[in-house]
Image 1 (cartoon, rainbow, N blue to C red):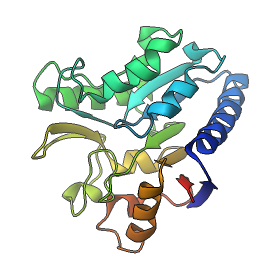
Image 2 (cartoon, helix red, strand yellow):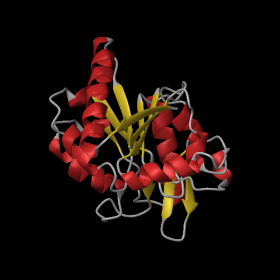
Image 3 (cartoon, rainbow, N blue to C red):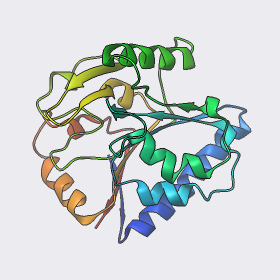
Image 4 (cartoon, helix red, strand yellow):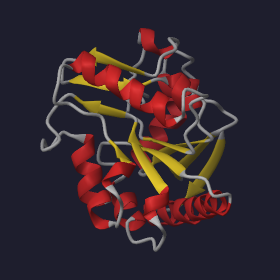
Length: 221
């Protein structure tokens, strides 16, 4: 994996935005849409706030989510709500560009529906997002795929699963790894130290299964 080391979160954000703008403009010149998969949790809040200040044509960008807790979009635990509050609500963008994971029907139906949405978006061809933004838990989990999970090696688009804290809907590692760029966002010293320890623990840890040719690790040193 390519490692991008910076001394501060601000420097990480500045570098991400510089590269994001460059990649977005390249795609726009080709008259193609730009797709980005958002991550949840608290890690990207400052990144999303800074990203929202970019003066670009947001209507050329489509937003997806890597995973979601099976809670209302109004819940404080909703990944959608966090991204909406810190990014989407601050930019001018058509609602048709927002492909959120619905949680208002049975979890299995919501999962199947999101798989269909992604298939239709890519017109049943290879699923390959431009950017897949990932956070990482201290145990090395990414999206809602956790250590020792059967889903580490299974191929699918979207699946529902139960955890002790929440039921969840998640995209797969194969979808992540088919993305053009995979951004692993390690915005503080603790996450960077966890990553340095975890990377030697083998394939039972989800983060160690990322496509090394496409993954960019943004981390503090």
